[in-house]
Length: 221
View (cartoon, rainbow, N blue to C red):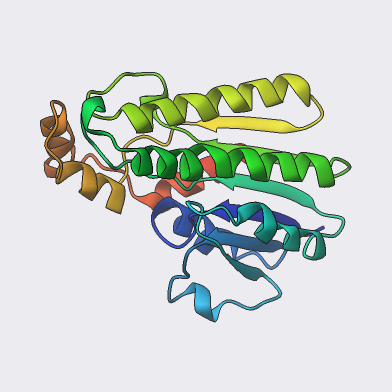
């Protein structure tokens, strides 16, 4: 039976790695909820890949995801909650309302809306919810207030969901530090812990998104 994988932020980094690996199995159908597609994804066959163009920072997601009803039949469903933003990296006193709203929309609200939608409309399916968490969900990092708080929020949201829906599976997975654009952005910012992240890159200690994606998929499949 074909498995459906709904991935947010699948156009780059870890999300792209998930999509590129999963698409190699003809029994997998990948739904990318992203602002754009990678060049490889533009060549994928429609029988195995669907691009749902959506900017998670805008208030259009709830309307956009209605299309899922027509894409999913009697299949196991995996929601990989991957998309998140870390910027602005700054002290709390410098945060502005737009930045707060954007982080909440991308990192929190989109996750809640997709999770709610799947539980409400596909409760008779085998559902697996995979939250790509972070060490920042459990550790306070100076200048990362929005990112740390949003990661902690979603982790607890999934924990509560697991207590309410014991028939489904919920995972909070910390992938560790990877070689992605997010890490590049972190290294370009000045904050108290920045030297530690620069050292990880200089010492070759960043994981590849592909290796991390394979490790996570081996856990949840």
